[in-house]
Amino acid sequence: MHTQLLMLGQLLDDRYQVIQTVEASRYVQIYIAKDVTQPGAPQCKISCFRPVSNDYASLEAAREIFSERSAKTISAQ
Image (cartoon, rainbow, N blue to C red; front, side):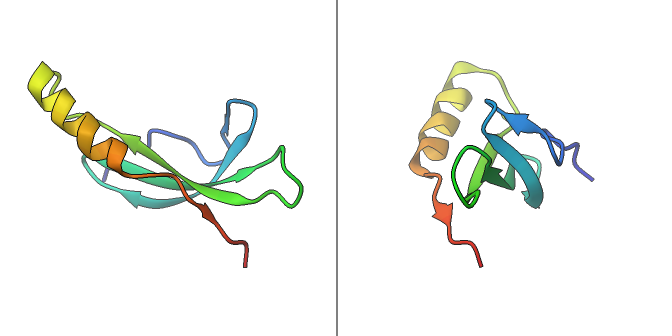
């Protein structure tokens, strides 16, 4: 079991409220959040990266991989 980086219900930047954990692994945790500042509270994904090493080369490689992912608004169903 992996320690959660964010808590359900947690509000980030006074805007995004975490509502669901989608994936939790050793390296990344992905959450669904709602934008409480927008009409209809559209949902988005929040990815949290947890580096397993703090040496420069590993962090730089991880930054490149992680930056390739983009947050996408997901349509409310």
